[in-house]
Image (tube, rainbow, N blue to C red; front, side, top):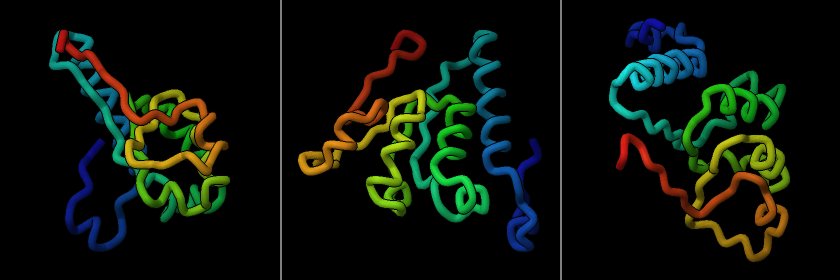
Length: 129
């Protein structure tokens, strides 16, 4: 739960990115449940490459981690395409939330057209707004 300090970043001693995010998401959602401000949790993508866990488990672990965090929606970053469309489709079928991408032309990628989670847009109502 502690924040990663600049000295820790500089010495490569910051660990637990998903754990840190999960802690904050739970904290804010608990506040919301107790009358606090509404929470809209969005993930901006680029969750794929650059970590040892992705190198070993690929999209399976990414989908599992994000499903545990329960974002309201995520967008696709460029790194979600690092393994090509064939590497992204299983992820899109495993996640339990909308994956937003308004600027994709799916005319020549029927495998992405039929995925469970990919959407051009979505609308949320939080706190009556």
